[in-house]
Amino acid sequence: MRWLAALLLLLAPGLALGQGLPEGLRGTWVQGDCASPAALLQVTARAAARVPAAGSGRLLRFTALREAGGWSIGTARGAEAPRLLLRPAGEALETAEPEAKTRDDQLPGAAPVARWQRCAAVPAALAARHGEGFALLAALEHLEAACAGEAGACLGALVGQADVSGDGELGSAELARLARGLGWVVALQDGATAETLGAATGAAGLAGVLAARLLVESLDYDGNGRLSPAELGQDRAAVGAARGTAAGRPFDPALAAPGLDALRGLMSSLSLLK
Ligand SMILES: [Ca+2]
Ligand SMILES: [Ca+2]
Image 1 (spheres, rainbow, N blue to C red):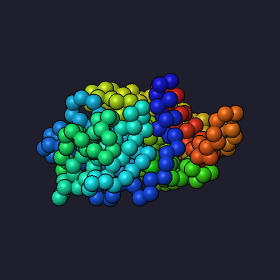
Image 2: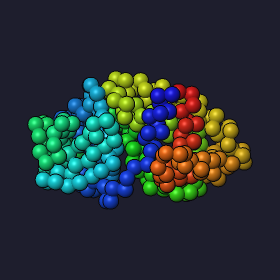
Image 3: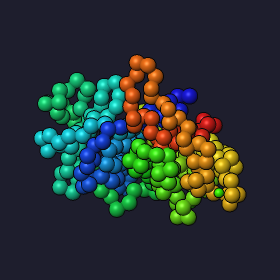
């Protein structure tokens, strides 16, 4: 259940962050040698994922962004509202992860500044281990934009993001890839180390293959072996539209978005066997 709880938190509505992080900061960054990186950093419009060769990784999905002192400062959800500072340094990128107690007007405080470079390619083993997670991280941002409204648009966007073959539908391999990416993102959000991240995504991959096959079996109404957006939404897209009106709880229109509910339902299906 912890996996599911983490997934639902991941899909909780965030705030609109304007333009997001500057384009020049986004993409894949490497710490150390390109052939043998000490860590990878993936920066998207509204998130940053740091995956070291050893030790704990970190995923921050920002709920607030601002510029100060030459830094872009992202603040993420969490008990201590963790922050990440990023700034360009010539061709390189510099980051700092300030301690929770550092005041906003004293950033980055005593936090060490890490330096990152672009590489023409990352080692194949690392690309294989993290590529699907990086792709899902970016896809989530597209989905959040599309899923604030009605379910049809949300499921269409999901197919658009996950459709590797380009036929406009999702087969079981594409759904399994989605499950592996989800497993990676959820594990990293949970503070996985480089070692446990591999195990977690491996487990999510195995469960994802089974869950993806079950999902295709359950919803493939025309029997072509793939799921169209309409099949994904059949009888299910409108479920949950009445959420968020319980007494004493502020109504949050984003939380009640049928698109988001449809997405949560589908992603939960992919994690049922975890
Ligand atoms: Ca496809
Ligand atoms: Ca079908």
